[in-house]
Image 1 (cartoon, rainbow, N blue to C red):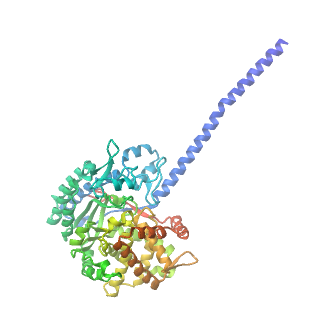
Image 2 (image 1 turned 90 degrees about the vertical axis):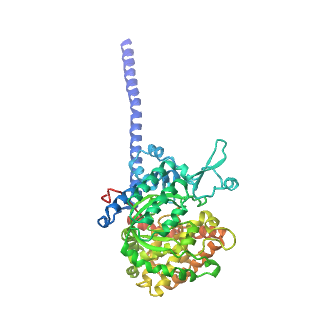
Image 3 (image 1 turned 135 degrees about the horizontal axis):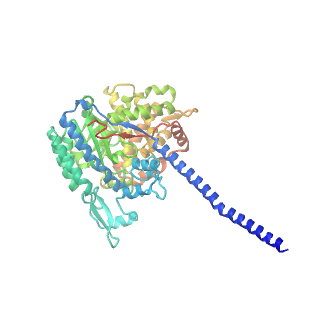
Length: 560
């Protein structure tokens, strides 16, 4: 009996041991399952990030360096070095501490996409966050405290709170105070200023040398008007640079604060010569705007000019999201009224977008019989006169509400871009009728329509994207185009002409009246993407047509 009992005890012990061993192995199976899920999650993140990166096509920024003098080559090197300091300055304005963000991200593709976007928010997807643990992008960017309310801002007794060149912070007691840009970003501006002064040593053009010296000083004291005035006086310089805090798109709270950027340029002297003749028509074009006299009473300066360039370096705000293909500066209304503006057409970047993005879009979205009207010359002219149109209309409201920029606040950029787009086409029509522009007007209208689809893809977080949504919905309402059963679009030229005139008048009047409520209503009702359009845009994505471009650029890329 005892033997049987002993045997049973041994058997039970053995079974218990086996059961114990089985229980110990269970966590291993769970762990393996967890590892599989983590692996799948990593793979999904990588696939998602690769798809986002693939929205951009890489373009090499080069120019014919053989035509540059030795001094010009040295000049460009120092200008690029100066522009590079705009990157960290802009990072601090749009996000904050780049290094701390990067340290949190393990996935290499996500890090690449963060670099492209200058932050964890997708500029081609309405600024949605794409990094785990990151919330929505603040409308205030990093110009204001994130917990600041508009009511608090309005009540704050700070004379320079609406300045383009101050940021707002809180003191130890939580009270708002301002910091001038030149102090807030001194560690980047001081070496950038030094590089501009070094560049000036190699500038053979006297006016450009003076501009570089004045701009170097402006970076250190935020007084940009003297250098803007000098920039307007330059006519014959072969090399150029746009640098400093310039556009206010990043401030989506008020559109007050400007963001740092840099663009280094080489002038195409032959193309620029061809564009000179259009300047003389500016007063006439202003007088012919389709609005009552009070909305076109301002007279812009007569020293405006049009020139074509190869861009060889982008930095900061200029290098984010949808890259600019043309520039209209200065933004200072006093400079504009006194001397006008300069319109810079970035020909090499424009051609890259036309070939790699606009033509493929047109081949999918424009009805077959109208695709022959998609022309680069039309794209160039539409873009050029968009920039010219920024200088037309009115800068100061007609009813005592101050400057248009101030009256329209956060809606100013979208409405200004929309005005420039539609007035640009209106001006093309005016000059075409005078025999000053070659080609068929259908080329300009069809290319303009295809460009709407290109720019809408920038999304609602981009001022140009919102402007194009408003125009698409307005054109649809007026019958300016028809959507065919096969999903392509046909331009109805006569109705598009009527819509062009009426939309020009509407936007010019909203600006002249400083009608904040009217603009807000327009953006709410027409600054949206209809469901059918979303589906059509998705077809472009499915066909892997890029949304925009990124650059292979720099001193080595240029061979300097």
